[in-house]
Image 1 (tube, rainbow, N blue to C red):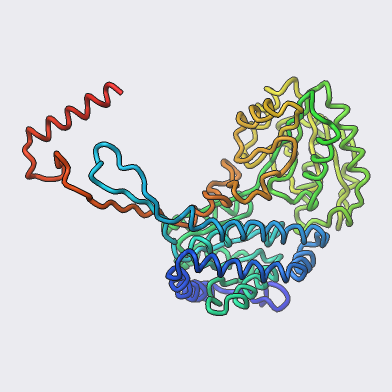
Image 2: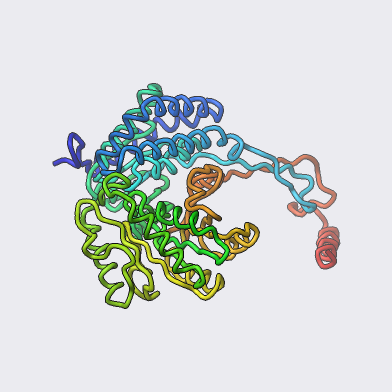
Amino acid sequence: MTAGTNHPAHTAEDVRAAVARARSAGRRWAALGARERRAALLRWKRALAARAEGFAQVIASETGKPVHDARAEVLLTLVHLDWAARNARRVLGRRRVPSGLLSVHQRATLAYRPLGVIGVIGPWNYPLYTPMGSIGYALAAGNAVVFKPSELTPGVGALLARSLGEALPDHADLLQAVTGPGSTGAALAGAEGPSGVDKVAFTGSPGTARKVAAACAATLTPLLAECGGKDAVLVAADADLDAAADAIVWGAMGNAGQTCAGVERVYAVESVHEALCSRIVSRARALTPGEAYGPLTLSSQLDVVERHVKQALVDGATARLGGPDALRAPVLGPVVLSGVPEDSPAVTEETFGPVVVVNPVRDMDEAVERADASAYSLGAAVFTRDRAAGVALAERLGTGAVSVNSVLGFAAIPSLPFGGAGESGYGRIHGEEGLRAFAAPHSVTVRRFAPAVDLTSFATPREKVARAVELGRRLHARF
């Protein structure tokens, strides 16, 4: 039984064996120290860059996306791995922290130590870039990794693990790939008994995340979950409509709409709504499906896309471009809807197809209210010529990331954390928070001298302790 051509369907026993191999390799990796790990990861990065075309071809063949999209995915992966490798020591290394007046006699330091073995369960829509947001940062933090790629993209996972072993032969078991159906990922999360991992990083649907969380809960294994989005773009009356339309079409139709932080909803002020719709339709109509973007990677997703579009029209929406007739496999045509009720599935549920809803709003206050009404809370974008106003609107939005006058502006900036809340999951990858997500804080105090009043000794007279406590109370009451 196989997960794909020449890729085995690993069992729970196989998963536990992979974790054991990774743990042994992880001990040696952690013992290297931050400088040595940095050098090793940069060697791996250079090897990945040299094989970028090979990775792009595998990604394109397994997902169906155009190879130019796959090449961009590889580049984003390199950017993030480079940042994680170069910044891990600065972010996680031991540093002194203030002791405070009460403990001035103590020197306090804080560092972050590896967790051990991280289990990463990856998605199929960005099978290299997305999981490497966990894998690269976990390795930079000193951990080993067992990676379960989607059953639709096992070749990417196998190639990734093999590339590390070839670039770093002394650490060949540091990154293990286990392939197979959902049951293999469930085993990694602990659904069939403890797998031995110290944390799980999952990307996928909210429903599957709940199952993974339940499996992790049995052993109190921490979980980082990224579960998709229903991202909104807010367009102000003063926005550059051409720039907004261009970004919206790319954000909605790129990768056939199969982007967790892609554009699915647009809220435009009434005075510019029609003009914006016209520009969006014009640009979307000019796309050539199959060249601009590929097919739906998961064929069953077509049922979801069809249901959303058909229900929106039943609910009174207008199809500005496309409609049910455009949704023909294998490559769907772009669909632009307007006037979709806010309780219609095309607004409330993740569509994950080349469909965008463009609704009018009274003003930007209403736009913020509608954007934040979603159960998802991953990303958003704001378009306005007034940058200060754009930043102010961004600060009001409840999503994990916001771009002003662009979409997905945060994806290529590795120093920015990425993640959401609600149905979008919890925890963060990327940036300093992403490194710390795969490390445990370790606090150390060193007594430098005897304090004037030792509050941690029974030998200190009670009267002296009482005076010191009262003095401290008065200081806090005054300042």
